[in-house]
Length: 332
Image (cartoon, rainbow, N blue to C red; front, side, top):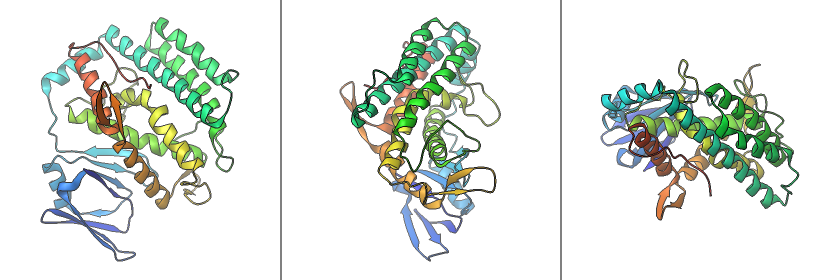
């Protein structure tokens, strides 16, 4: 099923029988989306949506995500069909199990660093860039060797932070000259490259939030990220190994193939930062959804990327309940 993206303030959405009717008051266009074909809805900005639309989405357990026009995540509405008190009780119990949390965090960080290295090696090879002398790659290898010996969560967070600096220093070599990347900045993004990365990270986190909630887990209760107000800590934990493979590669592809251009698809919002404009968001939504529908083979089975995300959540759930050892995601 598809994703319905509502990306304009000029849109109004109402329910007619088994369809969502989307009217654009600027160009007068009218679209009808059969609900049977809608798998998820993303609302960006402030389109006008009637309450019957929201009620029908909840009744059908169709997740509806809300983003600010800047691309920042607001939250997710679903039909609350995933509550499981026994499962959540186990999750809260594990939160205080230092050994479980540390083991899970080690595996997440190890897989993320492995995927960072593998992704950089592939991207460098495609560009004909030698990898042997790249300082970032050497540092990533060194930090990865220390992960098994980290004995505290704070120590792991420190290693992950150092690794991020090393990784982005190497990734910066792959950005086009008209949209350079110097260092990671967010809240607000200081340039177009960071704005695009932040927006794609938000969309990826949203996929994990929906998958976590669908399995009845508390998305705020993670094992690595520190939970704070409105932070989907568990979704952020589980998506860490996927950032370089899914989000960063997509952002680079959009920029290097000129599908997203610094001069055309970004705007400054006052003095607070640079963000994708409406057209830029539309293009990213389109390509991100295509990436989620992309298929790959794992253990002899063909899965979409979206189904793969659901499987990662299931792996964590099985480990949480003691059924299987912890296993996350390491790219081939």
